[in-house]
Amino acid sequence: MEKLIITAAVCGAEVTRKQTPYIPITPQEIAEEACLARKAGASIVHIHVRDENGKPTQNVDVFRKVVKLIREKCPDVIIQVSTGGAVGMKPEERLQSIYSKPEMATLDVGTTNFGDDIFVNDLPLIRLFAKKMDEEGIMPEFECFEVGHVHNALKIVKEGLIKGHLHFDFVLGVPGACPADVRNLVRMVDSIPPSATWTVAGVGRYEFLMAAHAIAMGGHVRVGLEDNIYLSKGVLAKSNAQLVEKVVRIASEIGREVAKPDEARKILGLNKVVQ
Ligand code: KMH
Ligand code: ZN
Image (cartoon, rainbow, N blue to C red; front, top):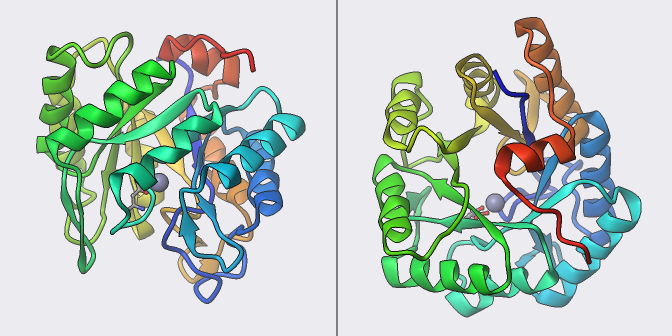
């Protein structure tokens, strides 16, 4: 099996300080958490940012600040910015993050229920985001919350909007979306081309269960406080690094080596962008 790529989703848009005091909020805290996660074994960091009140924002200046701080502290990590932002944000607002010179960005490839809300990603929006990412030389990671989203991704690939290696993230266990169940994971993996790579983000209590399945199946893993705030039942993770360390331990027990950022770039067909 190829080496395991671990992505750390360090803060997300939804988790609050009320839920966990360990969620990073300021650019300095987000960058610090990202680099500690890198040290623990993550080769990609998935970045959302917050404003001074802790509310999610897609403000490009805040993204630029975080990207700069991460590059100063841990220059080799792959930075992947979110274009999902938070539910209810307008497409133009969400797209701002790609102008912070990341190597990767998420491309949410379908509309889904998201708790009590609806996370809107219709095909015109997906095409627009794909085109803009291509113009900026950014590699997309397809975020699939449902199996139909895989087919939306393949549709825009067929339309010629995406070139190069295809990489999918199966986000399983969001309330209202596809449950985190191994049969659902297998169904999604079976739907992508054999040359594509995939990672899984199990939400909440399913984070490590999905991680273990992916490690055994030859996929890759995303963990982080965006998806799950607990290290084990009732025990809050004190950092993203703790969650990454747990994945490294599971991988080591199963005999799967962990990829460093440059090894992850090779697996993903990603050419390092010189900033
Ligand atoms: N916050 C979610 C509504 C992404 O980063 O692209 C969307 C999200 C996906 O987190
Ligand atoms: Zn995200």
